[in-house]
Length: 271
Image 1 (cartoon, helix red, strand yellow):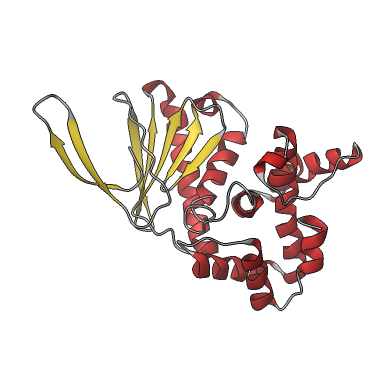
Image 2 (cartoon, rainbow, N blue to C red; image 1 turned 90 degrees about the vertical axis):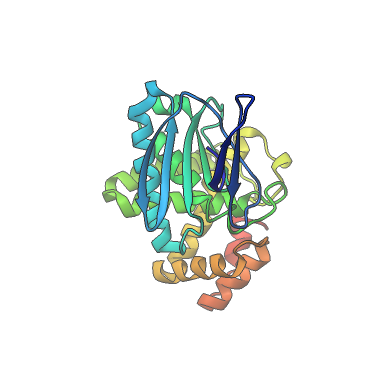
């Protein structure tokens, strides 16, 4: 399996195969090869969603498919249409919980065996990256919050939209407000903005993945849910296949809502 769609497959005389793949505009290419992969598929809004997994992880592979299908259907409605013909999720031995690539979500095999909700959280998060990174690009090294914090806020929207309020509130506390509040109680706070190299691993988790999404949550409280979604839809439409910078996002916020966002931005992201 790989980014894009298979256009042609030829069996060569030396026992190898040559695959030709095609895609619309993508930022990079990813491929995973395992002759023992099994696959489950579902069509959503004209998109073929495929889940690839080893045979002993079939139950987890089918769960991954459902999580991605649910997230794709939701984000299509909230942000704008997913533009590619296919979306693949693949179980690999990665030590990260999940990794995003254009048209592909990589999830750790270990998650397929674990109980609890982090598997679903990771699947929804990596699906949201198809909007914030794959389509709307940014500088992931020097301004990682711009895609990661927005992606994790999108994951919070997933929990709020598809689960009872008590479940969403529990997720909000465990993944967002709780880690940030604990850090502040220990006297540790810092701006969300900054290059990846400026954070320790723990800081990156707390401030980019937990505090950063709370900026978007605070903005929602100021402008309302409907206006916030219009902001994100406009941002997605204006910067698709391009590279966006923080000033671009701030400009869209003010253009769509009329809200003077700079004080809120300074309070949460970059003093």
